[in-house]
Image (cartoon, rainbow, N blue to C red):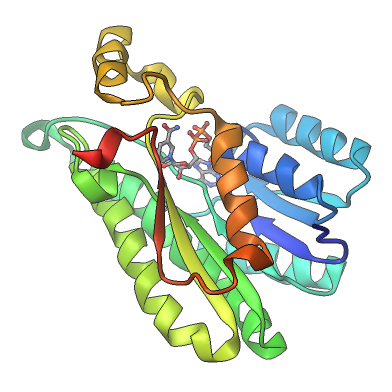
Length: 248
Ligand code: NAP
């Protein structure tokens, strides 16, 4: 499979799952345009890694919450690479607490990063996909948006919102030969989990039938499948990659 001359625009790729997706897709020849919030050092090291793979890459320090800045990023990507073929909404944060103690700012920050951010990048890029009558959009949701998790009302709401967004948009843009799908990871070993207590992670590990946390590369492989022709009849779906956590 080759994605030579195809351009991927992906949010939040300086670290974690986004970084693994960028490397996986650069490995099959795609041009990579990614943003990040503050980790310039990590962003530059990803640029270097992708160039060493022989693919083209450009990073942008753009807050996904800021629509005008995201529009500038998408327009610059189109100018630089000539097209945008694949949009990956990955940037996301958690800010967990019991609802009874949750500050309005903690609610809004999670919703505006995860859900408004998904709107911002998709809205800024989609006209390119519609004009070329082809494209793929992947939204990185979460099992939390399907089953719910205590202390994550803000995060669960944002991820359930992304799943609804995926279904509606899939119906809307199918006539333009654009597929829209979501991936719902379970617990994946990234910096995001570092703020969770080891005791809680051990408890969660016991709930996972495969008895381990997932790796970012395992999410990247699912993305690679969904953007391939092997997934040409799949749209509007949420693919769960969670080691069996959500089986019930
Ligand atoms: P991570 O390791 O914390 O990385 C988050 C990435 O998003 C970083 O590149 C960060 O940039 C970027 N980012 C955060 N806020 C941003 C903003 N306002 N504007 C632009 N970029 C921003 O997280 P992760 O675990 O890889 O998570 C990636 C996605 O997977 C998220 O949507 C998350 O909800 C989802 N997910 C993760 C897990 C898990 O267990 N890890 C499970 C289910 C779903 P900086 O480096 O500059 O901060």
